[in-house]
Length: 82
Length: 82
Figure: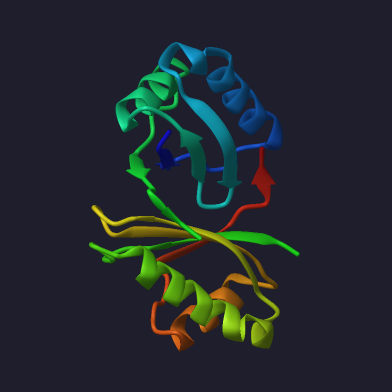
């Protein structure tokens, strides 16, 4: 399954609890789109969150993020990794 | 050691070989700044590369990337992760 990295902006001041809550909301419904969220990293100061997933498509990732109330600003397929 | 996610843009068409070469160039000198590059992901179509590291500071990460010829466009501390 292809990997995707998505980027969310505007989350200035995000707390560990809020990050967990958002991630858990995604995990709870990810199967509906055959997405597997693997990891998320947050920079509370600039409000940027990065989210790594395996999914059938970027649209599938976005549909999950939209349903949980935090659509991504960018979603990149990342077929190359080292 | 704090974690950082950096973002490089403008790498449209990056090949697996070029990503390996760039990553290996960073690894070869990372100790000079006590940086540990952990992973990199690339989207050849949009030319965006994400790079995860542990480092003393964002400046330390950037000094390595500058010396190897691919300065980052953004470097974010990511103290939160899930």
